[in-house]
Length: 126
Image (cartoon, rainbow, N blue to C red; front, top):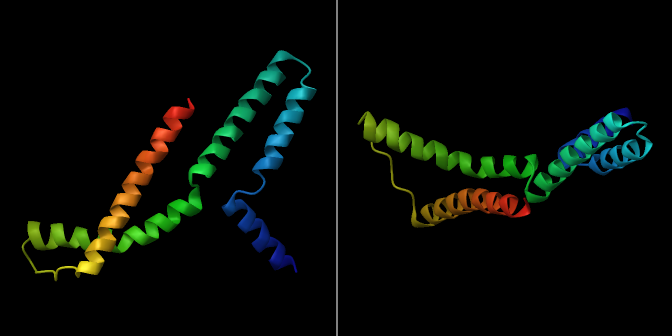
């Protein structure tokens, strides 16, 4: 049963649980503030936690790992193609099939297009 608790705690950390509780504690700390320094410290903590919450809404660590896992084979393929085949002239890599080339183009579009969209949303929020 102890191992199950550890796994659940790990999943909560990965998937972003606990942030709402931390925000609640920060709001309570602001209400309990005895002086301006305590109130300002609580407001800074609230702002930090709200920024983390906004970042998770746009795609957190889990999303980044999934994107990297999908992109990794194509990064390796293109690295070999450019460095090994073109720069060093050592071998000829087979071309990607039409289906794999289409998949690669989609991944690149969503990977970089998604990052650009996140940048636009963050800029609009400010």
